[in-house]
Length: 66
Image 1: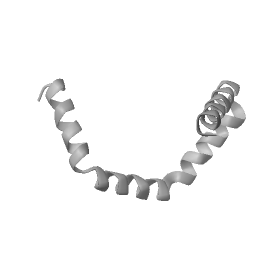
Image 2: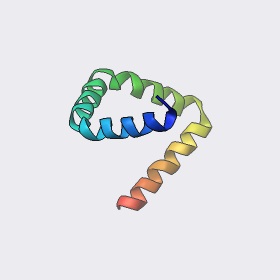
Image 3: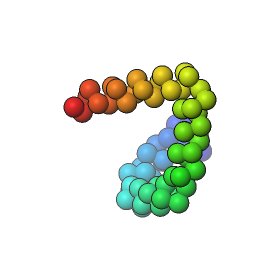
Image 4: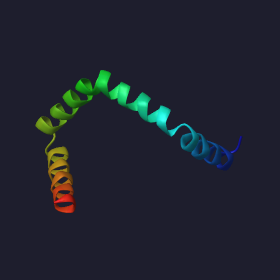
């Protein structure tokens, strides 16, 4: 399977299995989300570049939705 064929196949697969993939994603985050959040908190605390990027991202989100 070529790279172009794989892209087409995966696009169709994700379209056909969207609900199942979303359910698996929610289940994964429910089980592992605390670990990802702990990693983020560590980065936020120890990496000034990450902190600045996160603050800018959240500010942009607030302005866009607010």
